[in-house]
Each structure stands twice: as structure tokens, then as C-alpha cells.
Amino acid sequence: MPKSCDTMVALPSATKENQTIFAKNSDRPATECQPLVQRARETHPVDASTKCQFVELPEVTTTYRHIGSRPYWCWGYEHGFNEHQVVIGNEGLASKYEFDSPKLIGMELIRLGLERAETAAEAVTAMTELITKYGQGKFSNDQGVRTYDNGYIIADPKEAYILQTAGHEWAVKQIQGAVGISNVYSLEEDWDRLSPNGINEAIAQGWWTDTSARFNFSEAYSREADRSVGSGAMRRKRSCAVLSKYTGNIELQTMMALLSDHSDGSKPDEPFQTEILSGTSICVHHDDKGEGGNTAASLVAHLCDDGSRLPVYWCSFYSPCLAVFLPIFIEGELPQVLAIGDETPSDDSPWWLFRQLSLKLRLEEPELIPTVQAKWQEFQTQLLTTAYEIAKEGKFLIERGCENTANQLLTRYMAENVETMLETVRGLLSDVEQSIEMAAD
Image (cartoon, rainbow, N blue to C red; front, side, top):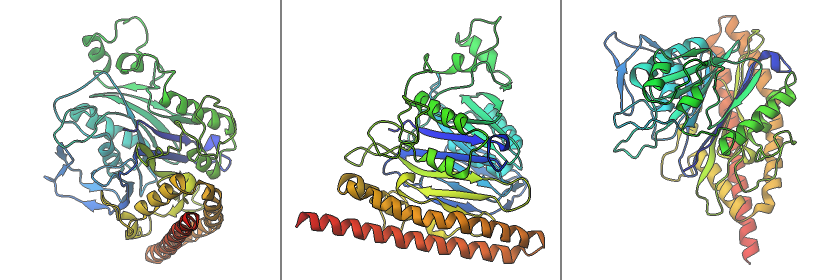
């Protein structure tokens, strides 16, 4: 099973255009389909409840419009964003806990945070209150669901937070500048807030004995005693080094390149590595049998705090280095085809088409990878121009009360881009298959 995901954020002080940029690679089992879905804002009765995978909890009066990237079987999301520019992504962590009783799944907390918050701070409050009451983490279950503790970055246009968890306990730190997190506990003594029982629980378990020192959350709860080694530590070193190097000049393309990076982290400051190599990197690839783990979906959220445009959410399927980041606007209607996909491979599912492209390129025609990447880059360059023109036009319409016109504009724009993407990926698959047939002859 893969044990990798990477999330990062650069706040306005760290970016070239003084706008927050959030990024996330969701790394999952190589054949676990992860479509993109949109949920409308809803109003709920006072006595309504929310049924998650294992836990049922009281519903709130209003749940906000949002878009999430979800493993096909899961109620929650690996990452997502809502109508208020709140964006959240998670990482799997390993604490010392193992429970027999059901808890919330970490991905469910992402959806709950998006549904219930207008700011990153509100999302932190909503999520930590649910964690304290219902818990999350590794617990036994009869549904074959792999469970684990979680770390999150929760951001909006003005601020961002790291939230790391262990069972019912948690620690929060407000982010300054730019930072990355991975599958390793990183909140040590530098937390800003702790769960109400966080220190006492660690003492009771015998996990914290130096009561005269400032409490070290990671030291107390992490299963890994040495958090400076291992895949998660190396990938975190890499993302933090890149963000530090570009601080003050971080752009959208910086984050896209970082999500597509193949450095193993042994040289954290090295230039972006575009060649697909064996081993663990931020852009994760399946093995030579098409198995193991792979980046399932990616997000770069380009938020906006000055009212000059709408936020643009760049979403990619499967390996970002072999795909294109599509601009998504939550103010429009997400093309329904992006939500297609389950456990069965299907040519109707964009996710499965990109999985198929990766398989054929990596296992049969690797020499065509540069050609495919160049084709996607041509399309990406067009999108990087047109998306921001549309973002400004959409904002102009909404400010003048023309929400329906803006919705139609954004919906049509997304539909056209998805159609082009699907035509392109099917054309590339056909070209690769022809090359394979020619080689066989």
C-alpha cells in the first residue's frame, strides 16, 4: 500500500503575485479510481444527521457548495475546495494508537470542513471539535478500509494552518510564509493550540514524561521515533527546500512543477527533476507491473484576495507529469464526465483513461513520454492564458449581479476544455497503440 501524499501552501508574502497558492498530490493504490465531484449548497432540517462510513453525526443547518476529489468508494475527499475559497488536503500519519471502535476517516474530515466553514480558521474549529468528540485514526473494521491518523493543511486567501492528529488528540499551527507537509509528524514543540486532553492523555499513556518541558506533540504521539528519515521525511525536506528557494517568487507554475517533481529528496535543493525514476518522489509512479502506488489526482488552488478575479482551481488526473491541469471554477457547473469512475476500468472515465495512458507509456513505449508531455504542455500553455481571462470576466459579471450569465460562461468554458482534454488523451492513446503495433511488426 502506498504511504505517500504531499501538501503545500504559499501564503501571499511568499508568492510573486501576493495571492495564496495551495497544492496537493493525492497518492493512492495505482488502480483506485479517484473522480472529481461537485456538491451543491444545501439547507438541512434541525434534526438532520450526516452518515459517514462508520460514524453518524448531527448535520449543520447549511452545508456549503464545494468540489472534492474522492476515492470512488469514499464519502470524503483527498482534497477539495468550497465556495468561500477554503481549501483542504490531507496526509496519512502513523500514531501509537490502534482502536477497535469506529472513528471518522481522515478524508471525511476534509469534506466536513469544506461543508461547514467560511474561513480556514472556521474549518480548523469544525474539524478539531469533531476529532475531539468522534476521533479518527487507525481502527479495525469489517469493510476492508485502510485507516490511519492524518495531517492537514487548511487554507484560505488570507491564512493557513497545519493540523496534525492522533486518535482524539490534535495540534494546530498557523503557517507563516510557505511550507510543505508529508507522511511524517512535523509539529513538535512549535504548536499554537492543542486538544483539551492532549497532554494529559500522553502522560496517562506513558508517552510523555518530561512534564517540565514544553510538550512535543510529535514526540509523544508519533509511532516513528526518528522523524528525520523515511520517504515522508525526504519528500517534506524536498517540498520545504523548493518553497524556501522560491519564497517571494512562488508562482502557479512553481507548484505545478513541484507536484510533477521526481527528486527522491536526497538533494533537497536540486533543480526540478523531470525524468521519471524508480523510488519515491512527490510525483509517485506505479511499478513495472502497473501496481503499487501512484499519484491519483492533483490540485493547485490559486486563490484571490483582492477581488480582481475568481479563484482558479487547477485539477489533474493520475500522474501530473503525464497529464494536464484543468482550470476549474466552483461558480460554474463541473462537467459531469469528471465524476465518472469506480473500481471497474472504463473508457468513459477520464481517470481510467489517464491510468491507461500511464500504463502504456511507462511499460511499453517510454520513449514517447517526451512527445506526450510536449502535447500536454501546448494545451497547458493555452489554458494558463484563457483561464485568467475567464476568471476576470466571471468576477466582473458576478459583481454586477449577473450570476446566471457568469455560471453559463464558466460552465461552457470548463466543458470545452474537458472535451479537448478527452479528445487529446484518446488521440494519444491511439498514437501509442499504433507505435506498439508497429514495433511488434
